[in-house]
Amino acid sequence: MKATTGKRPFALTRNRLLTIIALAAFAVLAIIANSFFDAFMLRVFNMCAIYIVLALSLNLLNGFTGLFSLGHAGFMAVGAYVCALLTMTPELKEMNYFLVPIVPWLRNITIPFLPAILIAGLASAFVGFLIGAPVLRLRDDYLAIATLGFGEIIRVLITNAQPITNGAQGLKGLPRYATTFSVWVAAGLVTLFMVLLMRSSYGRAMKAVRDDELAAEAMGINVFRVKVTSFTVSSFLAGVGGALLGHMITTIDPKMFTFMLTFNILLIVVLGGIGSISGSVISAIVVTILMEALRFLDEPMNLIFFKTEGLPGLRMVVFSILLMVMVIYRQRGLMGNKEFSWDMLQGLFVKKGRKEGDHV
Amino acid sequence: MSENTSDLMLSTAHLTMKFGGLTAVSDLNLEIRKNEIVGLIGPNGAGKTTAFNVITGMYYPTEGKVLFKGRNITGLKPHSITALGIARTFQNIRLFKEMSVLENVLVACHMSINTGIFGATLHLPGYRSRESEARRFSMELLEKVGLVHLAYEKGTSLPYGQQRRLEIVRALATKPKILLLDEPAAGMNPQESRELMDFIRKIRDEFDLTIFLIEHHMQVVMGVCEHMYVLDYGVTIAHGDPASIQKNPKVIEAYLGVD
Ligand SMILES: Nc1ncnc2c1ncn2[C@@H]1O[C@H](COP(=O)(O)OP(=O)(O)OP(=O)(O)O)[C@@H](O)[C@H]1O
Ligand SMILES: [Mg+2]
Image (cartoon, rainbow over all chains, first blue to last red; front, side):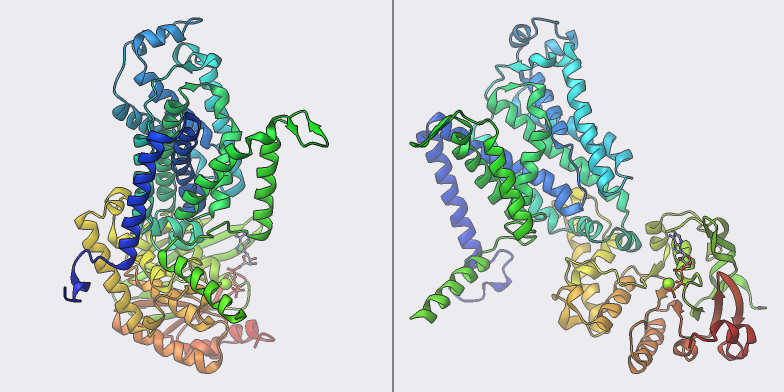
C-alpha cells in the first residue's frame, strides 16, 4: 500500500478505524444483551437508547438553539398516544375502552410499527409547530413557562379526550414493538442526524441564534424561522421517543407524561453538557443505568444498625443533588459543549502517563 | 445636491424614533450615494446607534421612512434588510462566542448557502457545492484582511482590534452594497485608528461598497469621510463636507467639553 490515501474521498484514518471498531463492538454487545441479558437488564439496556433519543431532542432545543423549553413530556405524550392508537388491533382497543367506547374512525385502524412511529413523530411535530409559532416570539424565561404550560395542557387534553385516548385509564397491552434492534437503530439514526445537522450550515445558524440572536439576525438569518424549525424537529424526535417508550413499557397513561419526565431528560442533558451530542449520549446511558441501580434507595433498607421504611423519591433527591453539584462545580456538564473524539481520549491518557512519569 | 438621484444608495425621510418621552432620533434626512464614505458623528447619547438600529430594521421608526436604492424598506425584518444588501457591525462587539473565526464568517454565508434543514443535514449535492463555495469565499475574505492564520481560533479569543476587524469581515460575507459601521475605531489608539481608516477605504474600493460609519471623535473620520452628518440630542445640527463641518459653530458648541 502506498501512503497516498489522503486524496481518497473516504480515507481510513486511525480515528475512523477506531470508530468502526467501537461501533462493531457495540453491535456485538447489543446482540449479546439481546440474547443473554435477563428481562430487567435488557429493559434497562434498551431504555438507554430511548433516553438517547429524548436527550438529543431536548439538547437540539436547549443546547444548540438556546431555547429553554420545559414542555417536552407533552410532545412525547402525543407521539406515544398516536403510535399506540395506530398499532393496536381493534380487539385490543375494544378491551381497553370499556368505560367509554372508542370513536369509530379510530377503532379499525391498525398499521405496522414503522409507519406508525413516523406518523407519531409527524403528529408531534405538527403540535410543536402550532405551539412554537406563537410561543417562540417570547424570550428566555417566558418561553420556559409557556412551554411548561403547554406541556400540561396537552396532558390534560389527553386525560379528558376519553373517546379517543381512553382518558385516565390509559392504554394497556401495546404490542411490544420497541425491540433491542428498533430502539438502537432509532438512537443511532437520531445521533447521526444530530451530528450531520450540527456540522452543516443549518446547525451553524442554530448555534448563531443561541450565541447572539441579534447578531444572527443581522447576518441575514431568519431567526424566527430557525427557532420554529428547531422546535418542530425537536418535537418530532420527542414524539418518536415517546412512541418507543410506549411500545417498550407497553402501557401508557397521562400520568407518565408529567413534568417529572421532562425533568429527567433535562437532567441528562445538563449532566452530559448543554450543546454536546456525545455528552447527551454518554449521560443518557449513565443516568438510565444509575436510575435503575439506585432504585434500592426508594425501597426499605436494612443498614444493620437501623432500618429505613423506604423513602419513595430518595432516588430523585440523589439525582437532584448530583445536578446541583454539577451546576455549581462543573457548570457546563460532563462534556461542556465539546464533542468526544479519539484524540481527546488519547490526550487524557497521555496526560496521565506523563503525570505518572513525573513521579518515577 | 444637484446630481441625479439614481445613484442614491440609502436615504431616510423625516426619520424619527421616540422611546417613551425621549426622542432619540428626530427628523433625520440622510442621503448617501453609491461608493461614498459618509460619517455620522455626535456626542454620547446623540442617537447615532439608534439611527443604525432603525435603518437596519431592529426598531420600527415612530415616524418617517428608510429608502434603499429608492425602495421603501421601513418595517422589513433585519434579516430581509441584510439580504437586500445592508450589513452592519455593532458598537459593542457581538461575535458568536462559541465559534471559530471561520465559523463566524460562515454564519454570514448561511443566506447565500440558502438551505433548508434537510438539504443541509443530508448534505445533498446542491448544498454541498454551495457550502464548499462558502468556505472558499470565507477563507478568501479572511486572507484579504489578514486573519486567515487565525481561522480556527475562537473569535472571542482574538485581541480587541482583530475582533473588530472580524466583525467587519463577517458583515462583508453577507455581500452587502452598503456597510454600516458602528464606532469601528472605538478603543483603538491613533495609529490603529489611522490603519483602520485606510482599511475601510481599501474595502470600499475592493468590494465596490458604500460606507456609512459612526464615530464620536470627529478627528478620526475627518480624513476618510467625504460627507458627514452631525447629531446632537437626536437632531441633525449639521451636514456637509468635513471642512465645513469643522468650522460649523453649532458643531463646535455641541462638542465643547467633549474633546
Ligand atoms: N431601546 C431603547 N430604549 C430606551 N431608550 C433608548 C433605547 N436605545 C437608546 N435609547 C436612548 O436613546 C438615546 C440615544 O442613544 P444611542 O445609543 O442611539 O446614542 P449614541 O449616539 O449611539 O451614543 P454613544 O456614542 O454612547 O454610542 C440615549 O439617551 C439612549 O439612552
Ligand atoms: Mg452608539
